[in-house]
Length: 227
Image (cartoon, rainbow, N blue to C red; front, side, top):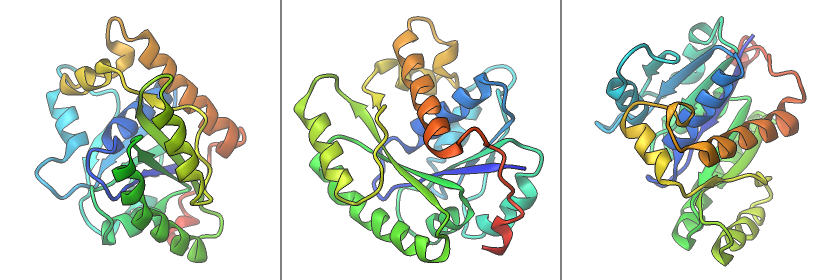
């Protein structure tokens, strides 16, 4: 019984990998078994690069799957894990569509800038199309790299709400330690002086659990195979 969370977006640099890794680490902290999938077919392959930079044992498996058959392979690969997190590619294409068809919940990270809001339009269009085939699909927008007490942070929330998908109340704030931890293959939970970043991640995990999992985070990927 596995719950699949896809992290997708049209624009590179929106925080997909930061979100994917830290969400995986936050769920790992709670004792869940995690599989993290990197679906980027570019040489960047950010989640895999994070794993490669790590010294010592990995917190959880990270595998590459840069193709459009994720929805066919996930029921097999995800078996035995509580959660599968899929780090999407930096564009909307066949692989992203496959992620949408695979996921129980899709999260769209968006930075607080007009360019990111405009770039999100293609992703939102894809998700609305996905709901035709997957009416049970859950969707949420996550504001990333938000600067505390700035008007632009509030403005982007209002702009994204116009797409009629829920925006999480908690955000991934602009904190240097997120980049520092990723560069060293670590999680913020393992970093010194990362208390505020850890609070961010824990708050996001708690909100996702309350709003979307309803205390029952174990959904079957077998049902996804027929989607």
